[in-house]
Amino acid sequence: MEKYGVLIFILALIAVAVATSIHNRKKQDEKRRRTIREAWGKETKREYSYEEFARIPHYYRKRLTSGIDDATWNDLDMDSLFEKLNHTYSSVGEEYLYYLLRTPVFEEKELAKRENIISWLSAHHEDALRLQEVYARMGRARRIAVSDYLFSLREAPDLPVIKDISVDIGLIVSLVLMILGQPEAVGVCVLLLVFNVISYFQSKGKVEGYFSGIAYLVSLSGYAKEVAALQLPVLEEENKKLFQAARSFDSVRRFSGLIALSGNVSMDFGEMLFDYLRMIFHIDLLAYRFIINQIKGKEADLKTMVESMGYAESCLAIASYRESLPYYSVPVLEKRETPFVQTRALYHPLVEGAVANDFATERPVLVTGSNASGKSTFLKTVAMSAILAQTVHTVCAEEYTGSYTRVISSMDIKDHLEEKESYFMAEIRSIRRMFEAGTKEPVMVFIDEVLKGTNTVERIAASTQILKSLAEPGRLPFAATHDMELTELLADVYENYHFSEEFLDEDIHFSFRLQPGPADTRNAIRLLKLMGYSDDIVEKANKMAERFMESGKWS
Image 1: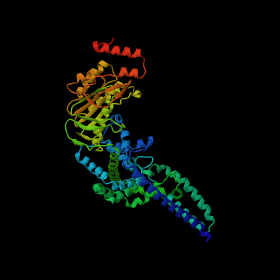
Image 2: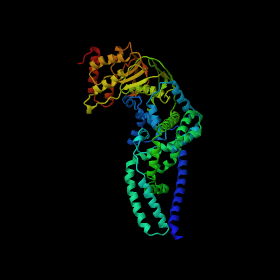
Image 3: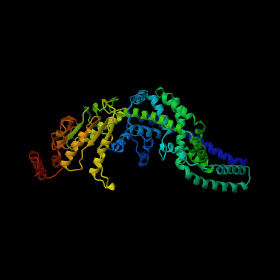
């Protein structure tokens, strides 16, 4: 009986490990289910590391799609909007959602398809939660974007297998001989064990970067089958794609679990034991070789699963995001040669307690107003709404009707000192993009503080001609400016709107309400007084401004 003691001990350890793992998985599933239900329709609280957020755009960039350019994306702080929208639980979901948000659609059929899925999930809450549980169990890949694996599978290195199998056989034989009471087998077993541990880390270092991604992609096929098995009628088209693509992975999917937990830092006894077994017998390395050879010929099926799974979870995220908003509208879009917009109670999706405005125009718009009155925020609101309408089909307004359009902005210009480029040079380079875009497709352009990087006389002259040229058929420009001269010089081309303020009890109050016509007040000098500047400075500044307004000359 004693000679079987080691074997009994090993089997007992394995039994305890399996039981512990099953118990922990059940607890995790219950906690996950509660978390999903509590989070639905709530504002997301997720925090991103720099490395984590940097990986999310990879799928968009790998697709080589012409979407919203980097300057416009950054001007409008679309990263923050993505974070608000990102109600996903998986890597494929969040990477595809980013791609979707950055790639406006110009076809009614595709937007109608999205709306059908989003609205159905909103109306069938329990089905939506069941679907979301699948994505939550799939989770996020570690260390690298899923798309990086997806688009570089052919570059994954292979490893020879004969040595590992031979040493594993030797280890097993020596262990059996030890159990049978052969003392000379102890030394052989120890030598083989040391050799296998050392060679394990040497081999693993060459391929470890692929472990989590490959395991994630292969296990994706299992989750794809789970999504298809839910048989949600609104996903019938996606279900067919998923089932057909996932079926080709049946022979390799069972092996993905052998490497899925590699490198996992956990106090789970079962997982710790499995990690040691991988190290001793090279289980994950052997599984890697088998899996990589199988999936190298299945890139098309993998891309189908990533796209269909990502698309479905993106619609889930949008449905949950809609529930988190105070109100929203499903946009009505029309195809016109020149863009237009008509909206009621439009508000900025990132500004807490944002003031809503009614607005309608098919002519170019010039916005004036005091400092901090809301000009820039208004321009960003209109631009973001046009993008949201053609991507997530959800606009932060009570009503929104507009045209299919591209959006280009020049708002948050920075000096490029490393390129020895001045602010003004950066500004005119940014605005030139709007002309280079042409008018093959309708374009809405947004400029904040036109040419503020140069002197007043040349700024007004150049701004006038630039804004006139941008107002050609096919483009709808929106510009904000402090230069009141532009309101007269462009009056026959641009509609004038403004934001104003009131001074109450030695304090300034902004209504953030859009009003027709040009601004008729200035607040810069008065703000000096409110901020504690001396009366002498304020009085002299006021007199200089008054003399200039009377004579047109500075004195």
